[in-house]
Length: 109
Length: 112
Image (cartoon, rainbow over all chains, first blue to last red; front, side):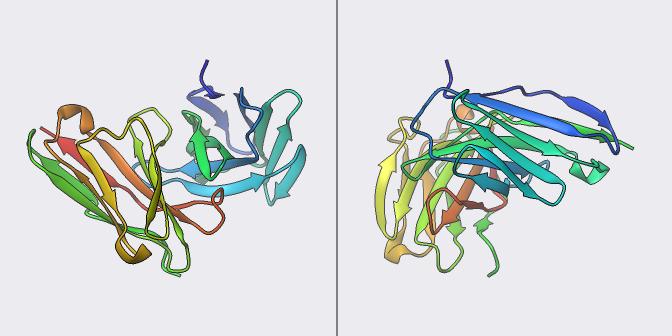
């Protein structure tokens, strides 16, 4: 079992819909939970990070962590075509980050 | 703050040749990381530096790979005797905290 599991998609949703992206993990030692966005042929861009279980909101984005279930989510409200990208979940322990495979998201105009 | 920069952006080389990539981190960041990313995968950790000290190397980093960070500023990643399996995007990231890493645009390596 990989340390971080993420469905690669692709996921296609109409503009304006709420998007839900998820990851599961197996290592209880993970301390920080991040979401990165990566456009084609670009480096990943840090969107949000959380430390504890619960929700964190930033504009149209909400990150959710459930440590008891080892499950994290990213919700995107009012999705826009410019949100089309690959979304990578990532988890940190001891200054090292482990990434999921990424989910390719397409927002259809 | 101009962000993390990497050069070159693209490199095409023949199998067996040596290549070197450069990463310039965000100036006040003391941690610098190298990752490799292949199509359809997330970035995989290769190695990291705190200042000039190389603190950890992944098992992915064979003896053909070497990284340096002289004086704790920019870093170079060298691949000797390249193989077709080395074709990938090589990403550099820098950080103050460890978990909050900022990535450069990457160097795309194609080995023919």
